[in-house]
Image (cartoon, rainbow, N blue to C red; front, top):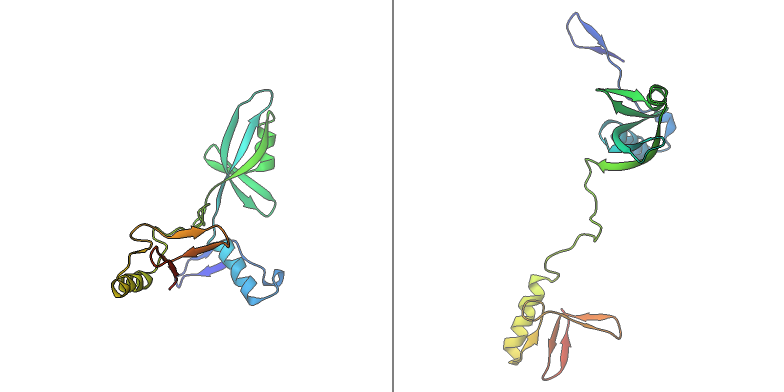
Length: 164
């Protein structure tokens, strides 16, 4: 790519590009551009020594021809690395980090799983009916076994289940 800066000096720069003919829709082209230019996930690869249990983790990056390995302050192709280090072999790759957020393994959990307006309504019902109603903020919601059902509020006398 030729970059013109407006001065007498011109500079040839080589950047990763996206071939629009590799994609079907405009949205998929945009995703390809995003992945190529902005989504820089980091991985490490296991480098195993033959005849020993020693495993070393080295940074790696994917390329069109496979992957490159960071070795001795420079990126080397996997083939070049193995030719220089004949006693070594590659194992599994391991995900290190990504600039994108990941969903936690337990999912997104809220500290309080109730709505403020439902609690206000249940408190109003307690005052209106002059009865204690168990809810999320005073003793917790109740879960019923049959059917699979969770109640917002329970009153013992008279027995009633309230849902907002």
